[in-house]
Image 1 (tube, helix red, strand yellow):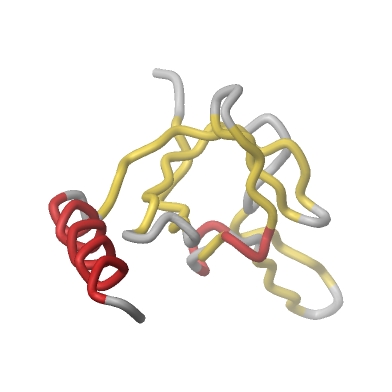
Image 2 (cartoon, helix red, strand yellow):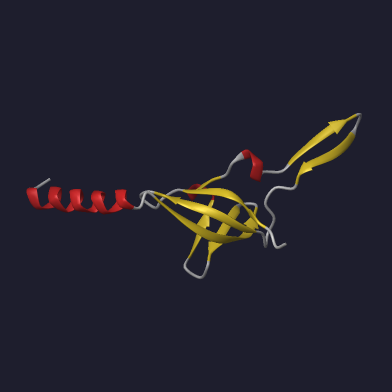
Length: 99
């Protein structure tokens, strides 16, 4: 890597470190496979997403009866996501609800 490329990379890294995360809103467009649409800007598939356990479905089986604990993400849900520095990974924080 030449000196010019090194200086460009250092400048790019300095700018990126000034904004380590960006808060965005997205809509769940598909659950299998999970896919989010961020406004009309771009679509994110599972390979870009970090989904916490609290955003997944869970159920409990007692005596053959299934009890739902969490619904998980559903198509049409609005979510808050954080774009992690570098822009290639997104953390799903929570669902957005209307009061």
